[in-house]
Length: 100
Image (cartoon, rainbow, N blue to C red; front, side, top):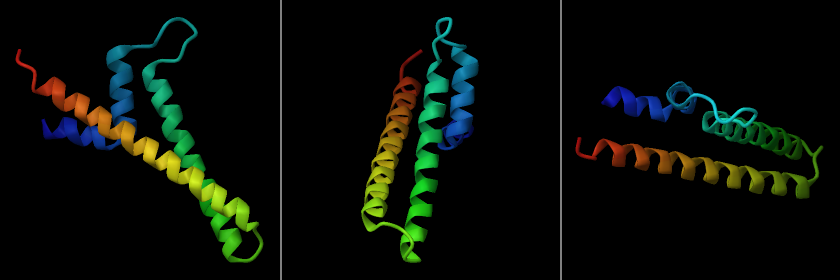
């Protein structure tokens, strides 16, 4: 059981496991695993973009407004990712507590 919970901690493992279990969505539509992968990838790219903006701002080369907006967007992306992770873990725990 602890191996399964540790798989949920690593989003790519959880997404690939879900993709294997659920298969793909309807023809032409992305599966849930693809959607989650895109959300996580987007959050990672937003974080990298924010780091670049912050470092250029610290060197005096960036626009302060752009840095603040970028940090705010990264914060929202991180909060969304954490909320999704928490809901996935809660759903997993609910399923595991169901009687057979």
